Image 1 (spheres, rainbow, N blue to C red):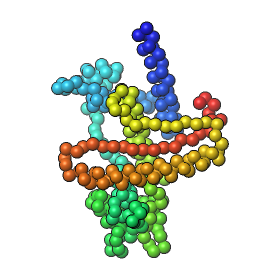
Image 2 (cartoon, helix red, strand yellow):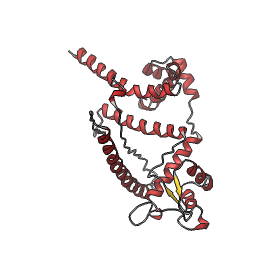
Image 3 (cartoon, one colour):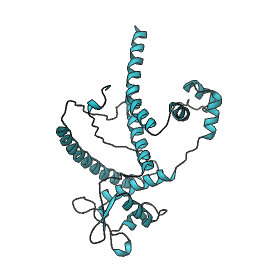
Image 4 (cartoon, helix red, strand yellow):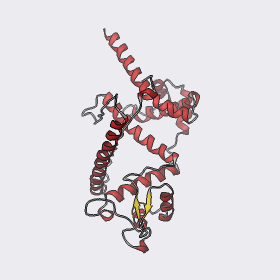
Length: 279
């Protein structure tokens, strides 16, 4: 009986895993990454997770144990562990800084009107206050405000008003043309969601919030209405929570013992089922 239950569980897990992998494989093929190409990345991911998550208390993690946990040859484990480095690429730094800047612009009272909406900013501090230059320097002293400003104009993240001030085009950092930055956020967002799924499958208590609704047989008009309303509601929630989280962070960050992180996201998926009869 127990064996049958395990077999059924394995079958259900395999079915769910295929559903998870299909969109990923679509991305891989679209970007000319073959099955052979993904193997080395999977090996690295297995080794990293085994080392970071599955260690034994008060014992140093060994190549042999990681090999046992992952099924990867011990020689490969040794090579991967020696080569792994926490590299932060320029695009990741740029994307992270951009998201921080938008977050401050949306949530800090200095850059908001009385209703909590983001104010238009002067480009440089010499032109007036509040300014984009001041915003950038409040987050990072390492990046030149003018360079970021030019990049944001190019990315169509901001618009220039008639009086010369600049305004956010949308309430979020969503680079339109920079594929590398899009990849950074894709990994960050999908990775966080999968961490929620992993935690809940492990029956961690209390479970993390993960809810969705599913409907089919809808007209294009109905989908457009649902999408429009969903975007407004989700953006309102994200804006509200961004403001609240910013306030908490400013109050908590002085204490070195506070190291907690959160990741709150939202998405809306739509598809014409006739485009993919297999689903």
